[in-house]
Image (cartoon, rainbow, N blue to C red):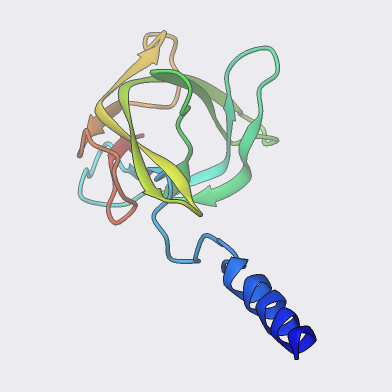
Length: 162
């Protein structure tokens, strides 16, 4: 009889000591990407695709975020460890007239706890942009900040006119 009691207690201890696996669910909140749209500088209401756009981080070991894609909008990650990020936007990459533009983003970071499985997400506030060397004849005419808080990916945060 005591064998059965010990067996039942052992089984109960094993099953009550287990917890469900903590997996971050597919729809859980994560650090949002910066949404950028591209528009025609002559007709600001019209979207305008950038041919063969390549976006990479600036610096010696630049990492390609986007490579040779023709598009009128992109989503890029901001740096969650620093209050700034710089990217090189190359229009017509691999074409007959490639043209580079470097854009620096400055912001403030705020880490928010999501849950035990997902950990933290970062939102970015007070987003400002600065085009490096804007008088060098690069392809960007101007940049407009639509939403200085990057807290979700539901709408564009910036528009680049070209």
